[in-house]
Length: 103
Image (tube, rainbow, N blue to C red):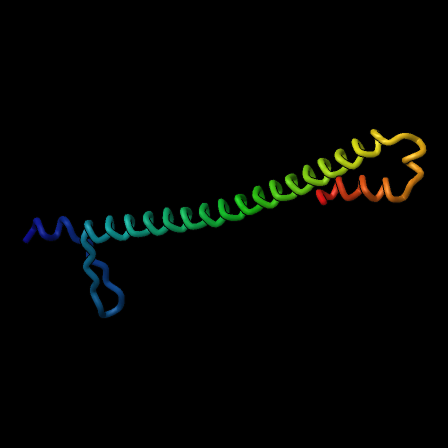
């Protein structure tokens, strides 16, 4: 009986007595630690999703900008090959714009 009392803590609240074993306290601490780690893990996953979305949006914007730059370069190359007389023709200019647009 004396061994049993070593492992237990007895608290009295009013007319009721509560007995708490050391293993129960350690179990509650472990559950609390696991809960905190799970919460941190879920927060990390949410932050990572948001970060990945931001990176993906930046890459999409970069690709769109590069595509526009290629189209402008193609149009400029077409215009540079024209003679001064051809540069006055609206048909030639429209032709170069269509080349830039990939048509």
